View 1 (spheres, rainbow, N blue to C red):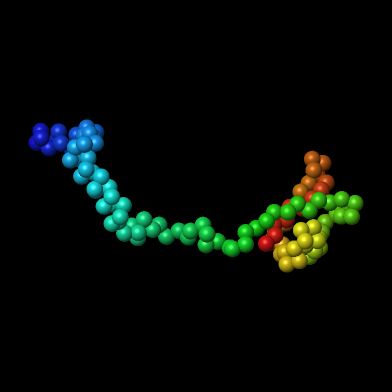
View 2 (spheres, one colour):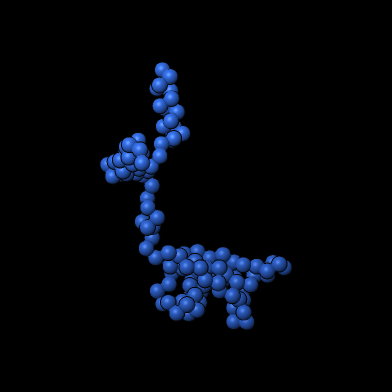
Length: 113
């Protein structure tokens, strides 16, 4: 029992040098684990990040100035964003009004694709 406990303690605290046979056996075991472990053991079922939509959202700020005032509807925002970005095929995925400290509407934050 004492020999087994001492051996387990030596392995756990790794008291072997690089030139010992124990070190060589450990290296072989590590390499065997790396190259022989099936990929399915590590597959967690989540989708990879690259599987998402191929064209990510782009955020554009549409400031309100003399030409723009008041609330705008989705089609008006989409046409102004197309003009601003120069992308005739841009589609609005969502938009949020931005207000200043006084509560006045100053811009729209628009997500386009």
